[in-house]
Length: 118
Image 1 (cartoon, rainbow, N blue to C red):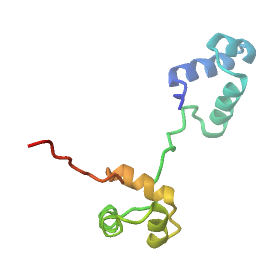
Image 2: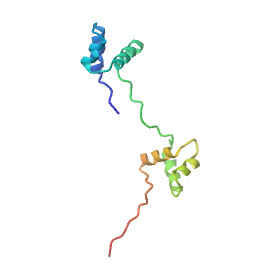
Image 3: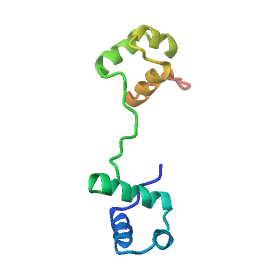
Image 4: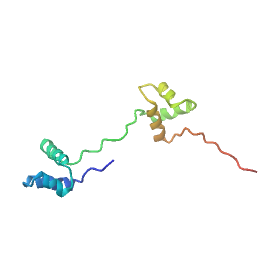
């Protein structure tokens, strides 16, 4: 995911437009798109600030009780993730089960130890 433009760059671009420079020239100078500059100006007009919006992306687990989930996985370790999702309920999908297992470090692989020659 690309990082947002720095606050310093935003500040310089917005101030340049306010000083009377043409938007096209400001965009060329700072190597930003016209749409980006317009969004910054619009945000400043509406909120008084043009800083980047806080990162709200990322996954939010639908399974909140991790201890309960760990014991649930131990009880149902022979079942598929799809079946586990059906048993868990609460509109949980196979992907939710998979993500939470990955987050908690639970693998589906069996931990077999092969002994060497004696």
